[in-house]
Length: 424
Image (cartoon, rainbow, N blue to C red):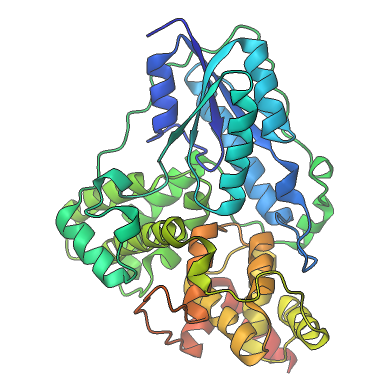
C-alpha cells in the first residue's frame, strides 16, 4: 500500500461485492474517493421525443446509488454524489483530494465510451491517469478462447466454445474496510427536478422494483432458494428470476449470480431453471462482446439518423400509449409503462409488432425502451433489436416463436389483458 489517493468512478457497477476497481483501489491506495456523477446527458430528450432516462428508471437508479452509498458506509466509507458532466467534476475532485489515479470499468456502447474518452482527456491535462478495468461480463475477455475480433457471430458456437475452453473466475473479495479522506464532502442525491423529471408521474406507476445491491442480492436468494423449484418449467429463466434490472446497473454481478446458481445446483441438481439462468448470462456476454466487436453495425443500420414519417409517428404513439387496438400488445405496453419491466420474450413480441405490423423505424422503439425499461442495457437491448430486424451480422439462432397465451400469462400483463378484454 502507498500513501496515494485513488478515485473510484462508479457508473454501471453499483456494488461492493465482486468489484475489481474497488478492491484494487483499496489495496493500492492509502485512501480512496468513491464518486458517482448524474450526467445530464443521460436525462436529455431523444429525436423521437422520449427521455433518455424516464421517471421509473431514474427512481431505480437513485435507489441503486443510495444502496451503493449504504454499502460503502458499512465498510467505513462514503460516496460523493454530484450532478454534472464527469469531465468537469472528476478533475475538480482530483485536485481537491490530491488524487493520483482514477479507476473505472470500461463500457462498450459508443455513447458511454465517448464520455470515457472525454474524461480521460480532461484528466490527462492534469497528468492523472484513467485506468480501465473490465468487470461487466461473466467471462473476462482475457479468458475467452478467441480474441474479440474472432468471436463467433453465432451464439451457439460462442456458447459451446466458451463452455469448453473458458472458465468463470471466482468473484473478487469484498474489501473489509475503506479509508476515505477526512471530512470528505459527499453531497445529497439529486431530486427529480434536479434531473428535469417529474416525480408526480410516479404516482401513476406500480413501482414494484427497488434498486440497490442488497435488494438485488435478496432477489437472487429468494429466486434460487424459495421460488425456483416452483417455476422449473419456465422457458426463460432471466424472465422468471426478474434479475435483469439489478444486473443492468451492476447492483448484481454476473459472476455472483453464476456462483450462486452453482451452489444451488449442488443442493437441488434436478431443477433446471437455474441452469437456464446461466445461459441467459451467456446471452448477455454474447451481446456485449458483439457490440464491442461490431459496434452499431450489428444492426446493419442504413437509416441511422432519420426521423419518423407522419404515419410512423402516429403508429408509434399508438404503440407507446397502448392504443393499437391489439389487446395483447396494448396490455404489454401498459404493463411496461406501469412497472418499468417486461421480460425479454414479451419485449420481443411488442418490438416485432412495432416493426413488422406497424412499419415503424426500430430506433423509435429502442428509444422508448431506453426511457421506461428499468433493465435497459445498450448491449442487450441492441442485441434484441438485431434479433427482431434480422441482422445479417449476428446469427442468433433463437426462433422467434411467440405464443399469445404465454405472453398473456406473464405477470402483470395478465392483469392488463383481463382489464382490456373486459372493456371490449
